[in-house]
Amino acid sequence: MERTLSIIKPDGVNRGLIGGVIKRLESSSLKILAMKMIWMTKPQAEGFYAVHKERPFFDSLTDFMTSGPVVVMVLEGENAIEKYRKLMGATDYKEAEEGTIRRDFATDIEKNVVHGSDSPESAAFEMGYFFNSFEIVG
Ligand code: CMP
Image (cartoon, rainbow, N blue to C red; front, side, top):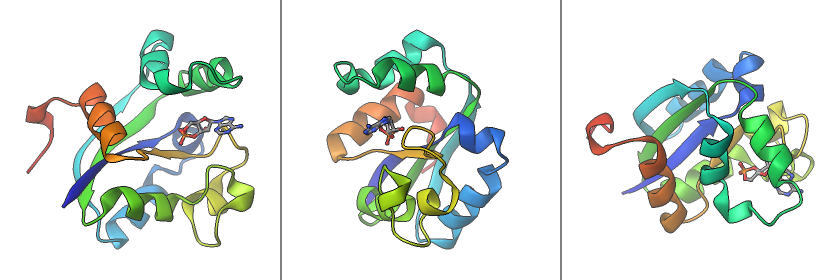
């Protein structure tokens, strides 16, 4: 069993896609262990995306991630990290496979509806960034 962090980004929340994303999660073998809606400050978003701080898109990304509320979730399942990344599709929705969340809903490489951890190390950091152990069920 593995755990991963999922975020429904401000574009997904604003466009009424929370239910659509959660439906796909619940139709897969991933289980939601924690969930909340938050509105990040710029420093909180910068801390979350610190690994990208040298990238040219860092400022734009952290502006976007603080432009409205997001839904953060902890998901659990066998190979949860890989499984959720498959459900999301490639970062660039134009390269994402048919039937993936990003292919179906994203409008932009930045406004790509969802985020998912990319490794066990980042999952541990990202889950701890938003949730304490009492908020994760199971
Ligand atoms: P995410 O999975 O949240 O991880 C980093 C985010 O940076 C990515 O999704 C995109 O929303 C955003 N981003 C913006 N521009 C780029 C880019 N050129 N390459 C990769 N990610 C980008």
